[in-house]
Amino acid sequence: MDLNEYLRRQLVFIENSCASFDSGCVDESIRMAVCLRVLFHDTKNQKSLLTRMGARQARVLSTVPPLPPGAVMFYGMHRLILPVRGTPRISVPLGGASHKEFVQPDQWWEQVIYVGGSPFRGGIPGPQLRIRRKDVVLCAADRDGGAHVDPRLTAEYQALVEGLWRAKKGSPHTEFSVPDDQFVLLRQMGYEVLNSPDLVALTQQQVPSTLPTPSTS
Image (cartoon, rainbow, N blue to C red; front, side, top):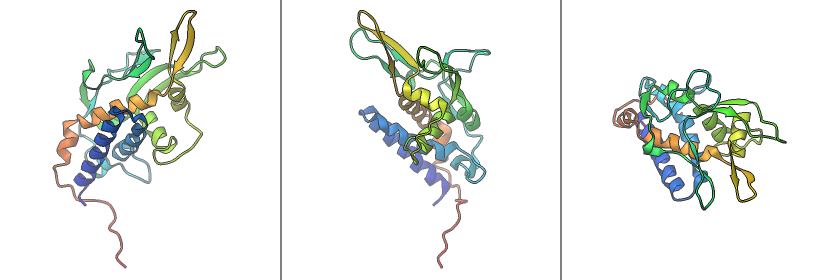
């Protein structure tokens, strides 16, 4: 199978997972993380699909603005919605993002999407965190049930699970967290990848496979 067909398959997987997410199956975003790892993550022993395709110069949509110098609080991808009635929720803009630019895969993968304190414990704020796209994707894929399960979550991902936001509701006010930021962050990443023309164009190009040929003996 040519590598362009492998890429097409991963984009179809992401598209299907986005549709499932939008219909209410938010856990589907964890499967998106596996596809994103396949596309972007290089290790010493395993190369990403884009690297195998020689496509590390392809442009990927980013809806996250550049991190301001010296920022101590930065929500680059998601927001807290506090309705007058109803439950507070985390939201991402999808195509309504005010910032859109096309960047190379390495920049997209390493881009900081959150800076701030981790959740309070016992009234004491946790350590300052800088969360990149890759931090969310790799922990979702490698530890949170995407491809593997490992209860030892990273500090960055644990903060997402517990909820970066705090909301107050009722009178007198009751403070509570809005958990599981990681789901909506992965959904926005899925939107970015599916709306990257360079990646879509690569599915139409014939790129011979560099994967080992299975032995027939």
